[in-house]
Length: 219
Image (cartoon, rainbow, N blue to C red; front, side, top):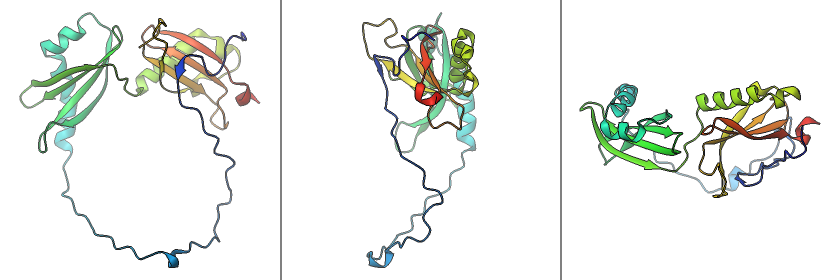
């Protein structure tokens, strides 16, 4: 493995891994809880009506078809490489809830959010944003497959099938990958406290941006 591969890759925004220290096993069982010194707490029960979610689930299942059938959405996605990331729900007022279809455009690296009325088969609201949604299982699988095809981690004995990822950002606006859909993958095995390798996969460009071994995870 070339020594130029470093961790973390420079220019990427990420949260550092917190060292939580050793695991206490067996757990404490004889420590006094001192509850008699606490003031009494009076809880007030809160009752909320039960909600039947079957109608919401049925609307969510139909929402992608309704969204993609409208000209406004089609105009944004015409000729683009895109994927439906998720279908959720959104309240437009206190009593009105609609499905919202989240679509990622890998060509222009924008997120399309379409709020639809399934009953009327109408488009309630259409907006675009640059805020990156969480990585999906399908995207994670594609990223792992790109690392597998690359072959360099496999050559070093890394089981790329153990990869788990999250979305990261290239914060250098001069970079060719700025704004791209980037997945930071870390590889096991699962019984290791630290990962053994990493890979930054660019799903917009459909290639591996950076990868390397993690010395602490290999020891």
